[in-house]
Length: 493
Ligand code: AMP
Ligand code: ZN
Image 1 (cartoon, helix red, strand yellow):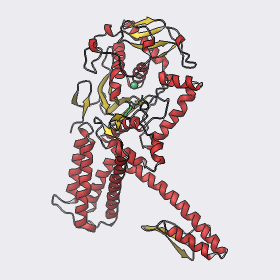
Image 2 (cartoon, helix red, strand yellow; image 1 turned 90 degrees about the horizontal axis):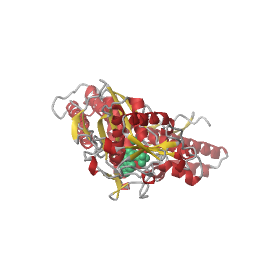
Image 3 (tube, protein in one colour; image 1 turned 90 degrees about the vertical axis):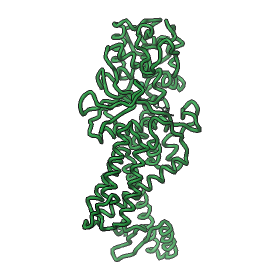
C-alpha cells in the first residue's frame, strides 16, 4: 500500500517516499512565543503529531524540527510595551507551550530551535542570496528582489506579477522598497528600539525578517532539501512562499518535496485567533472540567484539510466517543484474561475476521492523506462488530482473535494517542481518590478512638456517597469501589 499526501506545491495527492530510504525529515512552523498558544494553534500542532506518529507506526524513522519564533514584531512589541527584555516575554511563554504540549500528549520532536540562537545561520543565508544577486540594501535593511527571481510564487501557483503583499504585517511598510512585493530579509536596527533584539551583521545592526528563520533553521537541521514542511493554511502566503524563494534562491536546489497545510479551527465560522479574541487555551478548558484526551480527540477528529468548528458540545461528544473506545478496550482485556480458546470461529462475522478488516481499512484510510474520518469509522465499526461477536462467543473467543482486535486498537492509539492519554488521566483520578479515601478512613478511626461513633458513621456515609464501600477487618479497614477492591488495609490504624 502506498502512502499518499496532498502536496500544496502541485495541488495533488502524491505518493510519498522519503529522500533517504526509511527516514523522514519534517519541518513544522512553531509558535510565536509572545502569548500562550490557543487551541487553534494546537489543532495544527496536533495533526502534525498525528503525521509524525503515523509515519513512525509505518516503520519510518522521523527527524522533526519545530522552531520557536522568539523574535519578530509581536514579541518585540510585547517586550517594549511591558518595558522588559525579549527573553522575559518569550521564556515564560515557551514554558507554557511545553506544558500544554505535554498535556495534549504530543510527542517531543527532535529539535525545537529558537530563532534568537540561529541568527548567524540567517545572516549566512542572506549573504548567499546576495552573492546570487537576489537582494538589495536600503537604509541598513536588506530585501529580497522578487523581480529578479522568476520562480517566485510557485507554491501558491500564482503569477508573481499578480502577487500583492499580504498576510502578517512585518512592518515592511516602514522601510523603503524597490517593489512593494519585496520582503525584508534583514531589518536595519537603528529604527528599532529593540533593546536586546539587535544583532551585528555585515549590513549593520539589526534583526532578521520573520521568514528567514525557518529557511535557516530547517536547512541547518534537515539539510538543503528535505521531505515534508507543514503549517496552517495561513502560512502558505507569504510565509512559506518567501521561505521557498529564500531557500531555493540561495541553494539552487529544491527545498521541500511535500508541503502539507492544515485548515483552521473556527469559532462560529471565524478563525480562532488572538486578534479576534475568540479563543480558548488548554488551561481554560481544563479549568471548566474538560479532559486533555477529549480535547486531543476533538482536534484530531476532522481531516486536517477541513475546517473544524469548535464548540463545547463537540468536546462533550468527543469525550463520549472516547468513553466507548475505553469501554471496548476494557472488555477486550477482560475477555482476553478469561478466553479459553476452544472455539475459534471462521465465519466472516468472527472476531478475527472483523479485526483483520478493521486493520486493513484503518491503514488504507490513514495512508490516503491521513483520512481520519474513514480511519475512525473503521475503528467504530470494529467496536460494533467485535462487541456483537463477543456477545455470541463470550469466554469461548479464541485468545489470538481477541489479541488481534486489541492490536488494532493499539495501532489506532499509537497514532491517535488518545487512549493512553486518557489512561494517565484515570491514574491521576485514582491517585486523588485514594488519597481522599485514606484521609477519610484515618479520620473515621480517630473518631472511633474518641468514641464519637456518630461522627464515624457520618464519615462512612460520606464515603459511601462516592461509591466506596468500607470493610472493617482484623487487619484494618479495607475499601473498595463498586467495581472491585483497590486498597490494602489502612496502615495508619
Ligand atoms: P503562530 O504562533 O501565529 O506563528 O502560529 C503557529 C501555528 O498555528 C501556525 O502553523 C498557524 O498556521 C497555526 N494556527 C494559527 N491559528 C490557527 C487556527 N485557528 N487553527 C489552526 N491553526 C492555527
Ligand atoms: Zn515558519
